[in-house]
Length: 232
Image (cartoon, rainbow, N blue to C red; front, side, top):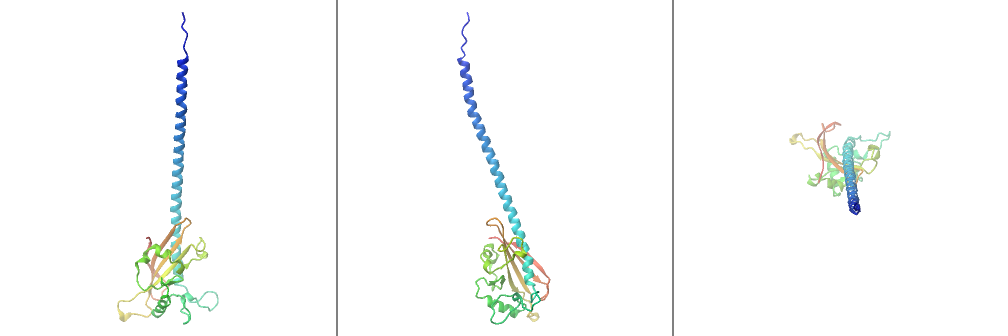
């Protein structure tokens, strides 16, 4: 006598297996999606870091490129090379009615420059400075970032990044000779050059500071004595 085969137990087992398979598949898909999102986020973060580093390097190179521009300004001729006799005011004292800043060639001109700049809080005008003292704040990048109004802007012809992206200041200090008997009215000056350049990304700014000294009081050659990036 054959007994009937009960199939409801087999069908129930199959239904239970199918019931576990679907949630498992959904969990695996969710984990795979999370892993993909994390990988994409890491790629985005790395891309942003690389872009920021590249922009900072470009900004530093831009600031370095301003140094020879400032040096050419210091060494510029006393007359424009345009066939006219009009003086270059950056290398000419001018008359008593003029108040522009200029690069002094003697101690008497240096004293006149200090007198003209004494009314400016920063002792600077058009990128030429004659500070009365050695102030520690001038070694901070934030100080120069707030002084662009008294800086010399670098024109688009001197930088491929366009106008209003780089500036410089030249602080003039007399180089006094220890032996007063040998002191000359044309004693050489020490020039501390500070350059500031803005990058493409917001907040990307580099401030460089270097010191340049002539070989002789009237020499157009000299030596760089220091070079460093300013921070706060």
